[in-house]
Length: 339
Ligand SMILES: Nc1ncnc2c1ncn2[C@@H]1O[C@H](COP(=O)(O)OP(=O)(O)OP(=O)(O)O)[C@@H](O)[C@H]1O
Ligand SMILES: [Mg+2]
Image 1 (spheres, rainbow, N blue to C red):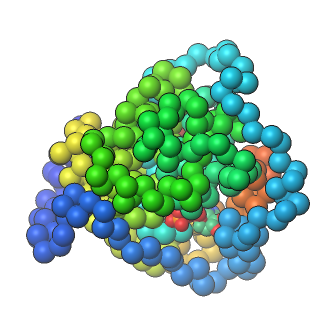
Image 2 (cartoon, protein in one colour):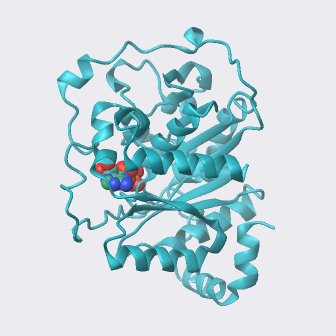
Image 3 (cartoon, rainbow, N blue to C red):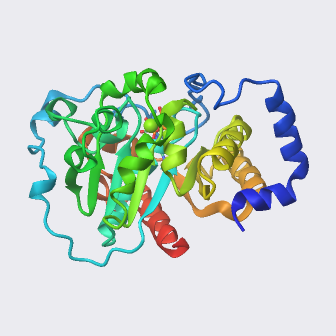
């Protein structure tokens, strides 16, 4: 029995409330291109580390960092796969709330699995391209990106940048993708474009992670249709569960109309600071709401995780002995154990 079914049985009143709320709202699928306003969280509660956004993906990349980058490879340069490949799992990393740790989780969880002899592909589905630049890919050097796969029928393998780090390939995004929300509207099978592209990669990777944008627009619908399961990062701050009802409702609609097998893979608590009562309370509340779906691992708030993208490195390479790397390696073990 999937998470949705158990929620239905255990939280009937919640669901009734959801339905009631949504009768009054334009629905996701009825207003396909409408996007929910980006909801950047406040990061101003007590912490004794410097502001985590300094030196992060929010900062312009320095020319020095760019010039240090290696030339991009193509799939033709990729070595033949030598390890056993299991059944590919396509996992959408989703939360329409902005800045909750989706890209940080996508990059570092995929990279951690790569170090554990798993073949991972990270699909950047966000026009901000944070996962792409956070892994040191120079967007200016790319000849194609995910936009061309979704809208110009380019073969997905031609757009993949292989071996970005150990065991990890990337399907990159650039600002081109910003036009896709609107351009897809008039296309045939607009909600299925990503599913069709990634379907051809089943059997080639152990895990495919999709880093979603902070909205519930057509790109996110493509991720919901393409995914087998969903991983929801939730930031341990005051409005943590705000918007979750709307997110779950969107998932349910896509599940009933377009992807019946869709389910929740898990919920990950991010930016946890055990010194604050607030973090502990949010963690408790999220565990009460989602139950066993919540991963044991909680990602701590640490400045190293926010610095790593500006060096174009996953945390397992930037600070392999630190708390951030430890958390994402533990998370990777839980992912492998969940199967
Ligand atoms: N565990 C953490 N500790 C400290 N800083 C973090 C942590 N996780 C993420 N950050 C920082 O918080 C900011 C938001 O994280 P991230 O970009 O991963 O969120 P997002 O959900 O992908 O955002 P968006 O919705 O804009 O795509 C970034 O500056 C990132 O470096
Ligand atoms: Mg992001």
